[in-house]
Image (cartoon, rainbow, N blue to C red; front, side, top):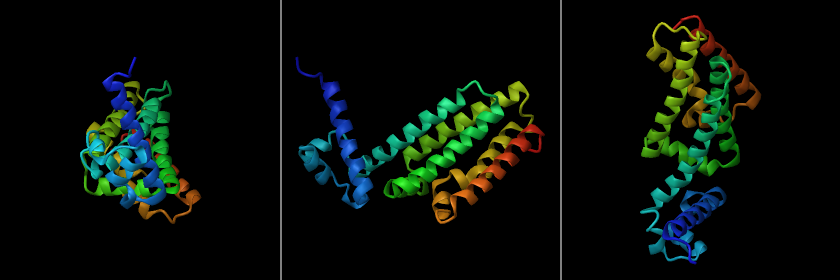
Length: 204
C-alpha cells in the first residue's frame, strides 16, 4: 500500500527542512536557495514551492524549528514540580544558554534568528508570545504559592523581561559574543538574584 498523501507531504517537508538546515549551517543563507535545495532533494523547484512559497519561508521554517524545540524544552521547566523561584531561575538560565550555544555552534542560523528579531517577523512574534506565557505561568504560580509578592503583577513581568534582556535577546547576545563565557555567567547569576529578590520582596 502506498503512503498516504499527508504522510508523503510530512516526509517531503522534513527532508527539505533538513537539507535547508544543513546548507544554512555549512554555507550560509545565500546558499539556501529553492533551486539548490530542490536539486539536493531530487525534486523540481516547482515541487519545493508546494511546501514553502519562497526562500524566506524556507529559511524561516528552519529557524522556526529551532525555536519550537527551544520552547518545548522551556515548557518542561515551566511544568516541573519545583518551587516557582527555582523554575524562573532555570527558565532564564536555559534561555541564555540556548542562545549562547546556538551562537557558538551555528552562527548562520543565529544570524537568521537575529534578523528575524530585528524585523519582527511573524515567527518571532509568535515565539515571544509563547515565551511570555511561560514566564507568566511561573510568576503567577510564585504569587499563588507566596514565593513572589510583587506590588504589581504586570510591572513585575516587565521587570523580569527587562532585567534578563541582555542574556535572552538574540541581538544583545550577539553584541556580547566576545565577552568571556565565565564573565557573562557571573553577570547573569547576579541579574537572576536581583530578579528573584525583587519579586520576593515586592520591589516591583
